Image 1 (cartoon, rainbow, N blue to C red):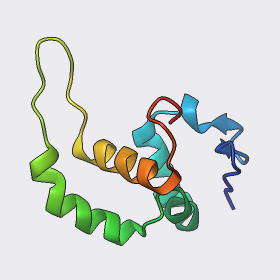
Image 2 (image 1 turned 45 degrees about the horizontal axis):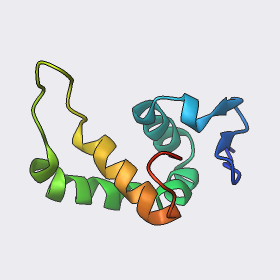
Image 3 (image 1 turned 90 degrees about the vertical axis):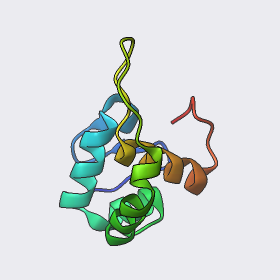
Image 4 (image 1 turned 180 degrees about the vertical axis):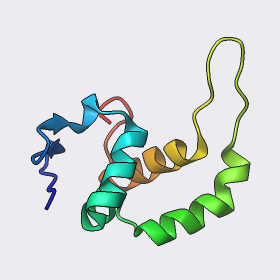
Length: 92
């Protein structure tokens, strides 16, 4: 079982969440330990998919010459994480 403590340290793999790519973290949590996914975002993966299907088209942006746009799943996960924890954007 993969557990996340208050510092969000992946105890099984020895990686800090802040050092991992957010997309990769979401895929790993969803696949390997759905309970940790739910604990991290405070939402079940099925509900996350439903919410992403509903708001995804509204939060999708286009790439520019200066940077690539974040995908809607990353935006939604960061927003849910912020709402679940109350942390500042910089600390996430």
